Image 1 (cartoon, rainbow, N blue to C red):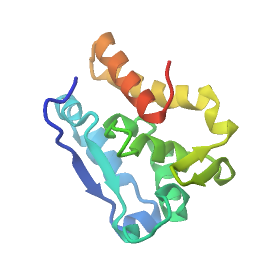
Image 2: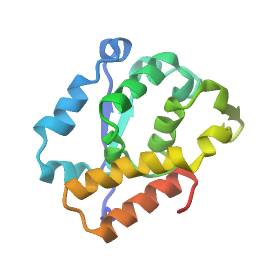
Image 3: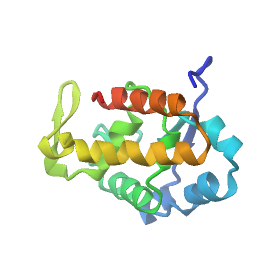
Image 4: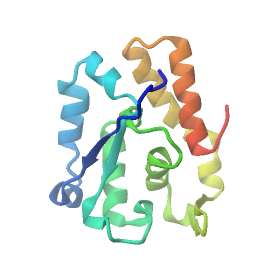
Length: 161
């Protein structure tokens, strides 16, 4: 499952879709139209961007429109993080979880984002990882492949299981 080459797919979320929280195009593309082979090829290779806020200095996870969009995406398809790039420097998993957490739990520091006790609750992270694991099982990944991916995501979140 380790990528020999890093090839990422950057998906820019259209401003209108962002403002209306319309995630149907992502759901249709990644969960209705894509076959298992295509899903496997994109595992760990997707980055969502929000061009409307490229010049905004705030972290994406505190911008209301982005928070709402990610929350809607999670509500409609909690398995979507399967596709996110795992690298900690990219921060897709961290951004997703931060968007799901209450703003009161997010502390901005010089080194990035710090979370309060609620986000540190292992159940939140376990549920997040479980959604990815279940989807990988549905795509016929082996247990070692699933374990490797879950560990990779956990490391990108700064946790270990």
